[in-house]
Structures are given as structure tokens and as C-alpha cells.
Image (cartoon, rainbow, N blue to C red; front, side, top):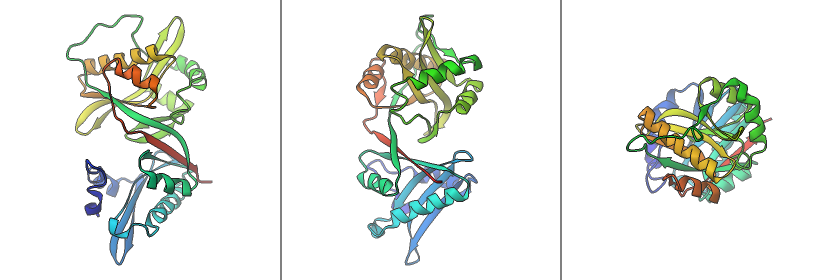
Length: 278
């Protein structure tokens, strides 16, 4: 099966890297379609929690394409998700992959947001940080202020109101915020006695690197976003991590903010789709 998952994109494919985990992870299920007793397609679902499923890795052998296998696999993935108790299923697709977009929309999934990736290495030496620009770890007392901030945010709806990690998405709820605050993974930018921006993060091993993964970043203006992005690079330098990677919408505001603090923007844009299962 890995043979037809090797050259999906110009750079190859990630399926081989996750294959062993897909076979044994009890939170997921690998589904295989066969034709003429030969493997013709695969898809994987993973339960992110008791109610939400993530659909990924849809691949169809080029010898068997245009026979409805993609739709059949996605439908089977939805059935398996419902069997496991999911009430919502989501996926991410490259905006240039028009075939997968059409397939998602035929399955009555709706596009709820989009994101691109912005990356930066640590600084060569640790720069100084002014007290006015320093990020603060959120505390439980900040929860209501954070929720009010997100409710008024222009960025929050652009990404679908979700937090991204490892190309998967979970809705940003009070429960998720509480979990991340308790884990000391929420950074706040407070200026002039108000919340001016925030970042939801976690440290992950990705592509054999230790990275600070930023699954949601928000700021009231370009300056606030630039300050947060800069301070996150400082944080990566302090922790001796290999890189910071940010999931954020590819808007002119975001692009200019990250470019100003020397982040590299991935030109790809990914759409997030979701569908209710009840």
C-alpha cells in the first residue's frame, strides 16, 4: 500500500512516517479499500477526544482512480467515526487540491477556516526583551478576559475558531483554554492595562526536531503580532529548541507581521473543513 503513497506531492508523502502508529494507535482506525483483491485506497481517522474525529491520509492508487473510491473511503471513515461516538469530523486540505475540495463538499462538509505555516529558527544569541513587550504566562484568572478577547477577534473566525497541532484541529473552547493554561502553554501580551494578543502553544517533536508549535496566535494589530512572534523566537532560544512553527491565516497583516521578525512563510494555504455527524 505504501507504494502508491510515495509520490503524492513533489516532495513525496508523510504516510510512511506515520504508518506504524496508524496500525497500532487505539484512538484511530486505518481503512483500506480493495479492488481485484488488491489494495486500491486508504484513509485514516483519529478520535481527538470523545466527540471529535479527524480525517486524514486519503490516498487512492492511480490505477483505480475515478471509480468513486475516494468518496466511499470518506463515507466509511464517517461511519467509523460515528461508531466511536464522534459528533463532528474535520479535515485539512491544500487549497490547490481541487479534487479533494470537491470531494469534501460533495460529502456536505463546509469550509470553516484556513491556515498557513510560518517558521523561524532560534536567535543566534539571546536578545534582550523590554518589560513592556515581554509575554506573560496566562493564569486561571485570565480565562474570562481571553474568552472575551477571542469573541471580539477578527482572526479567530478566519481560522475557524480552532487550535492546530500536528495538522489536526480542535475547537478553542473554555475547556481547552483551561487545559492549556494549566499546562502553562498560553502566552499573553498585555499592554496599557489590556490584553493585546495571545499565543496557544506546545512543545512537539516534528521531523526529528524539537519545536515550539503555535496552534493559535492573535493580536489586535500588526505591531502586537510582531511582538508576540519575536518573543516566541526568544522563548525558543531560551529553551534551546530547534524551531518555532506557527499556524496562522495568510493575510497581509499576518504576512507583514511575521516577515518583519524574519519568519519564513510557507506559500501553501490549507482549508479546514468540518461536518456534524448527528
